[in-house]
Length: 321
Image (cartoon, rainbow, N blue to C red):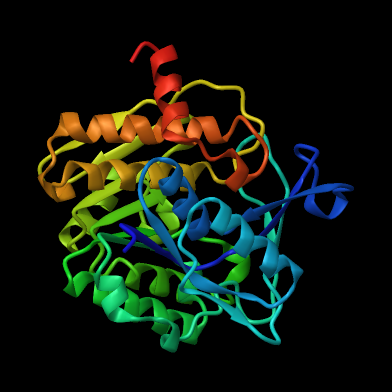
C-alpha cells in the first residue's frame, strides 16, 4: 500500500508564457499537468515516498493525458476514477513576478468531482498519511467524500495533512469559504497555510496568534509558507522561522506543493509524531521544504518542475549544507 494518499483535484494548467500580463490579454499558454494534491503526490514520489492519488477526471483526451502522467511518475492511480459525461477540469493561470496566483477555472462538475462511493476507508487507513486541500470542500458531494476520507485517516492514527490552497474565484461566498476551510482543520495533524491566505482564513496577520488557534484546535504542526521570506513553523513545544533560498524564479506555480511534498516525506521518515519533534529537527525539515519550493520556481509548469531528492540534496550541497 502507498505511504501517502493525496485526495482532491487533478487538472490541466495552462500557464501564460509571458510574465505580468493580465489573464484576458495573454496570447500564448503552456500546457502542464497540475492540481495541488496531485502535485503533492508527484513531489512526494520524486522525494522517495510511495504515493497514490484519489480523485476523478473525465473520459476525454485531457483525462487520458493526466492518468498517463501520474502512472509514468509512479503514482498509484488505482483510485483515480474516470467519470463519463464530464470534462476534465482546466485552469488558466497568469504568471506574475510577485508570485501571486491569478487563476480562472473551467469545469462542469467541480474541480474535484468526488463522491462518497469513491472513498474506501480501509484503503485510506492502510496508508501512513492523507493529504488534501480545500477545493474538494467546495461542492457538497466532494466535501462529504473528503470528510469521509479524513475521518477514516484520523481514526486510524494517520498523519493528516491539509493545505487550504484558497482560490477566491471558486467560492460563491467569502463567509462560506472561510467556514468550510476552517472546518477542514478538524482532525488534521499538519497544516500548511500560505502568508497570502493566513489573514483571510485565520482572521489575523500575526503568526503566533493564528498558529496558536490551530494548535489549540488540535493541529500538531502549523507551517506558514511566506515565499521569498521563507517559512514559519510552530508546535506546542517549538517555534521558529527558516529563511528562503535566493533563486532566479521563472514561475511560482507548484512551489507550495513541492514544499508540502518535501515536508511530508521528511516528517514520515522521522517515524515520530510532528508535535514531538524538537526545533532543530523541524528547522531541517522546513529548510529542505524551502529548497524544494525554490527549485520548483526555476522552471515552467508545476508538475514538470518538481524536484527529485537528488536535486534537493545537490541544491543544498551547493549552498554549503
